[in-house]
Length: 269
Image (tube, rainbow, N blue to C red; front, side):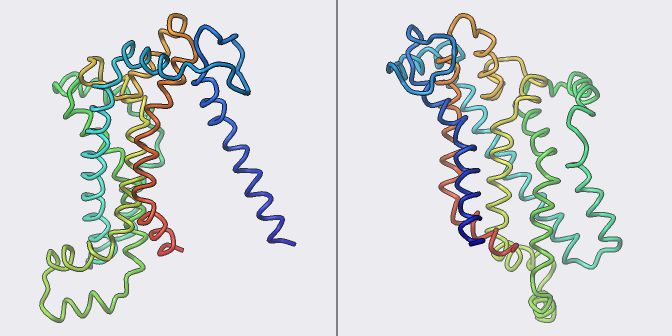
């Protein structure tokens, strides 16, 4: 009985979760000329390709998607690498005050991003990082490290200490231990952390509209927000069609890395 009830709850939550996606699909398919101004619950015309073409040309989504792909891949990979080094040091190496180092790095996830937005903007303006690709990569790496460190550190503490002790007795250096033992054993956790950070960076709007203004620098969500600013000109179906196309990369990345993602969840459980 409990299993049936649990399955019913899961199905209900899944249906509720799917409602916004369904409305996005239906209204993105609707032609601008046939859109009444109220959300449609079923398609009454087909204007998807015209909507996509209008969104693509109006908001210049191509360069923005290339920028976001660059930011997401480079900053996520950099954050996972740095977080794995920090997790290895904090969980495996014999450092003092491990709890202090953990909370010092993990505290980066506890503060709202808006708290340091103004000083960050001023620092970027004074150092020449404002409206540059390297500046966007730097901030995305910085905000991604704490959560990636949390995931990798929790995985690192589950590694058998006998493996580490045996490698040390055989004369392996800490660097050799990291690359030859820790990294291969942590591939699933690293892949899961990469997927989390890829999605977070791809969906970022706050830093995209604060630290970048040029069309060749801004990420995809800033471009989509610009399309929303032209709301009265292009119409809601065009905006929704643009939202559909910019959502596809995160869905593709999730399905491509699903095996690593599920494997990491099983290991942590």
